[in-house]
Amino acid sequence: MGREPEVVRRLGEKWDLVITDEDPLFGAFALVVPALRGAEPCVLKLSWLREAVAAEAVALSTWNGNGAVRLLASEPESGALLLERLNSRITLQSLPLLDAARTAGGLLRSLAIIAPPGVPTLRSVAARIGSTLPARHQRLGNPVPGPWLDLASELVGALGQRPTLGVLVHADLHYGNVLQGERQPWLAIDPRPVSGDPEYAVPELLWTRIDEVRDRQGMNRLLSAVTEEAGLDAQLARSWATVRAVDYWLWGLENGLTEDPLRCSRLLQLIM
Image (cartoon, rainbow, N blue to C red; front, side, top):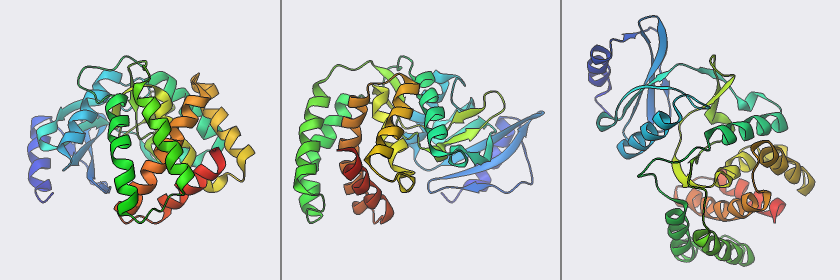
């Protein structure tokens, strides 16, 4: 980013912030600076992913604090969001897996409201995945077993033609992206919004703690914990999990990741 102190100073003046002496938090693509606006604790989030920041602002303003962190102000052209402060030290990672899954399922239900215009649709997402899977797979040396790749390709074609609910979906709702709050016990952060069906968001809740899942029976319990709490179609969630596991497996290899492709492989072994 390079210009963080200047941007923090300027936005601090614009939004009447007092930057506290607490340590900032650093993520892969963002800097989070604790601040006060009057007596209200908040955080200034800065990212160089301008498009993602603009999409995040749209999603958070649509949810308006119901199930997600509250957006207080935004300047997407600078990659800046002003957010209510949550407890970043306590996430859903701290709960037993099935309790965390049920809590996340409740959030999926709360977040499923009509999507605003301009949010990418699941039809476009499915088209991208379906059109790129074979070439990406071949370029990477065919890492995914053939039957899994074939099934994912078949499923994504059908999913792309399926009518959706057109609701706003948090497409990165893993356990680390749900923080303890004060207004509500748990609130989601860092959305990557899409318009479609909330079942699309279930796979992250299956693979991010898959080391705690022993067998197929355990995976079925985990899937049921999420889908029953959220009132979702378990088979639709299973289909998206298959497609997204293959897609994310390839994405992980493309970006030099080592653990995530293994998680995807294990998910496919347990869910198919």
